[in-house]
Length: 76
Image (cartoon, rainbow, N blue to C red):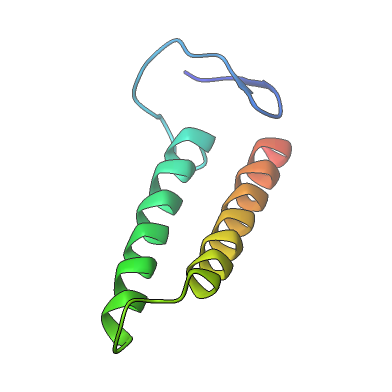
């Protein structure tokens, strides 16, 4: 079983996340959702997406993912 000692520190006794609240699992899921959102956005635009647009989407998803992982680690 994984035990969170402090934010960002996970006792890594096994390689498989044991819960959906595991920060590593959340990071993987959020990363996949972010990739899907960028691909979906690129498909909707008539040309290549502007770098500013991609940066805004990536930062927004990254901040939301970081906040979710941080709160999950703090509250569990």
